[in-house]
Length: 73
Length: 279
Ligand SMILES: Cc1ncc(C[n+]2csc(CCOP(=O)(O)OP(=O)(O)O)c2C)c(N)n1
Ligand code: SF4
Ligand code: SF4
Ligand code: SF4
Ligand SMILES: [Mg+2]
Image 1 (tube, chains in turn brown, green):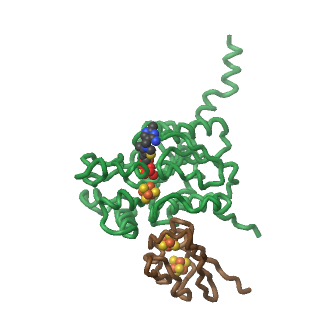
Image 2: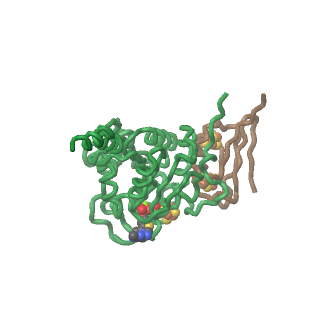
Image 3: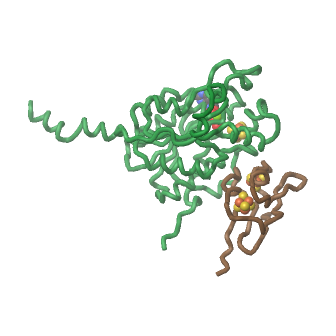
């Protein structure tokens, strides 16, 4: 299953089948976009705070995150 | 407008999930390499990754470039043959710290001395990950591994220092935490002619982390992050502090003629025919 958190500018997809719950995305997002559920799976809690820096995507060791810019034009 | 290439042109998405442990930084390094190749717009069929054996040595399984999965320690030996056979190819040798510096140490020294046009991308996780966490030539002094249960009694190699001394044209160190810097160094190394080295300080929560760093994958990543300091800060440290850190940044960037250029000059067509006529 893919979980998405959406805001007017970005959509964050997390592929739950690929995520190994290392916690890097939760720990290192400066904007605290993610929170862990009880199993350590990241939840996209505050997508409106996301600045689209994409560091979470680049630091995810398992290619489980995709930060997508939604083109409104 | 030109469409920017994606890392997906180089990354074998259909091979997911990756075989590596939770919190292993190999996937981060793989992303940095495939992103760098995309930025440079090098067609995948012009790239060969040569790997040895180890956890990082499995990286070629996930790449759409050409791959040569050789034997432990020999990625540079195979890479040298590939480069000489077809100098138009970009050859990347992906090696672990054990692969590059223990069993493959001599290949490393001589590839640098020869200045063969290969980019070595070394995952330094301070241990033999694949075989269960034995100490390697980069395990820091006194750190615990399965073969040094009370602490290793040997000092570690400075991988970048070794590469510099042996003559590499480009030497840089970054980490799997500093992802944008890591990608930038890899791209610079690929573009540079001659022997180039990027050392990526990496996480191995399963073996190195478990015995030395209390806590989880995030603590292992914190260790990697805090161990590494930029040149400007490192130079201000005293010797004791320096011994506890690793300097990051572009440490060597020069233009010594690479092996093939020198070889072709010495064995030029003119000198061949000249020799013939003289007799
Ligand atoms: C000739 C030979 N000797 C020993 C081995 C066993 N072996 C496999 S991987 C490895 C070390 C791996 O460590 P490293 O290169 O640091 O890679 P990592 O797994 O940490 O990524 C060893 C000793 C082998 N496969 N072949
Ligand atoms: S960084 Fe990737 S693998 Fe790690 S918890 Fe986040 S989504 Fe999962
Ligand atoms: S893109 Fe940046 S701000 Fe947005 S969730 Fe990822 S790390 Fe946080
Ligand atoms: S053993 Fe270490 S290096 Fe190997 S996959 Fe696991 S974390 Fe990565
Ligand atoms: Mg290793």
